[in-house]
Image 1 (tube, rainbow, N blue to C red):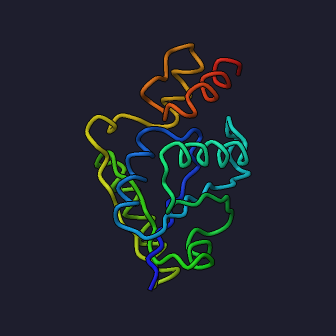
Image 2 (image 1 turned 90 degrees about the vertical axis):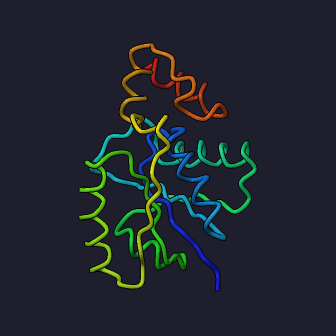
Length: 163
């Protein structure tokens, strides 16, 4: 039996905090599918295709052969089931994350009892980090070095400073 975990998110942009969770997931699952959410209700800085491409670059740079990336829309549990994933992978930074994640996990469990959510605690050095913080720092001309993976830092910095 293959153990597949899906790691969903908007990843706008993908940060070292996301990478931290991904590395934990890789150690636990045979295959990790990073699912980049296409959400027409949001106005992301990077297109869905750009986000997928950036994550693919990170995966290649880090030599993570068991990781795949694709975009999806619709219900996460439907996407997970469509790729054979029995687990949803999520990261937790603070107690406020837990409250939100607990509610979402309960709803997902109600929608599909066969899919479980697993959580990885953020490393303390990443507990403050969010994509929105990276976007704000970069848009104001601040350095995002160490906040995003080196393989995509230049791409992200250029976009954020040229907004």
